[in-house]
Length: 248
Image 1 (tube, one colour):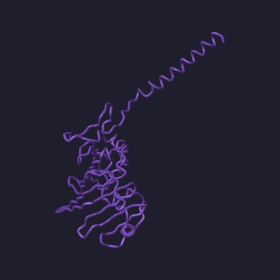
Image 2: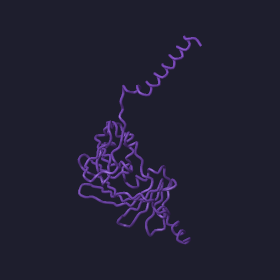
Image 3: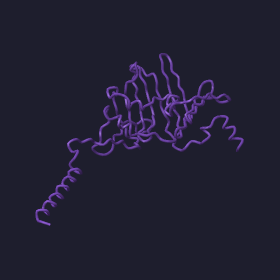
């Protein structure tokens, strides 16, 4: 091989190495996009407004909060108690709901003045019955997300569909002992103001408020969830409970 050929080969190798080094270390330095990180999942009692940990972290803002919420995933199995309060001029009402969730299955027990209503969503079906009653209402459902409607909770995933202009403020706050993403946004034709608290560690909605102007008209708060898998009996219909008892 001639000296000229060896020189050309060495030059090509050097150029290739330079391109690889540039691709690894040089590209993208002109635009720095800090990664989105979430705050520590276990806040201390003294922390009133937990901040994200780490360095070069994107601040929570109307422009970034949708990306942060998109990172969250709800716990697969849990149980908790949810308290809903409706407020109107001259009065209010409070409803307590016990909730059990396992994957796509949800069981809700609603305490009402006339008795306890049971709501079960499983296998793309909705079942409703009252304690001490043999009648069970059955209907098809479109998706497991309909459980939020029966739980009377705001479906906070709607935040992902909102224009940034509808998001009024964002922050990391403690709510119910959980590090939460707090978001205020306007929605609906009447322009109600919604404030939601979404747990960073579980993805669950821990609290919510809806205002008509300056007037609070709806509030929701959750107890600390238990993450042990609910008993299978919670997802059975009354007739299935009877068969289960006979088999036992």
